[in-house]
Image 1 (cartoon, one colour):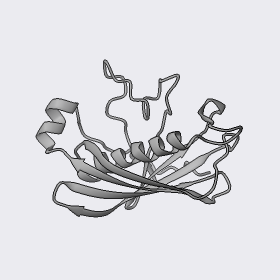
Image 2 (spheres, one colour):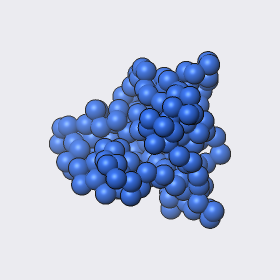
Image 3 (cartoon, helix red, strand yellow):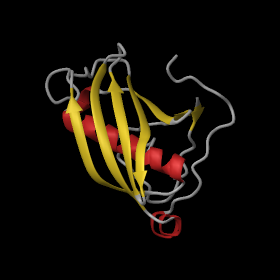
Length: 163
């Protein structure tokens, strides 16, 4: 896997709840490219619980939404917005888990609409949550001028965030 470079890191005004690495309250997600999939290894914190030691469902939905946007950034080299999202919760995820692994990939594309499938696994590797995000893609020029989109490259070296 190769780490995806965050093109907005250090940009004035950048405060994304999902991926700003310096956000004290945010999720601080990082992303990797693994073939057709985008992967994130996320470390839950107690402040994200809904019930005692249980990751809040809204936080899980936000994780799924954020990784979907990074699928768009990396695979389509543009940005866009979530048009629709469906989440299925199968098993609880514990906030005491060392890590949560998310995997997302394009399922299908129809013109400027992309369906992205997301799977969220707990620390033991059990599939706990699935989501489908329908993403509306912006034309590349609009993404660049209105949303500061720039290249979303990857690091040269291979790494395994799952180790």
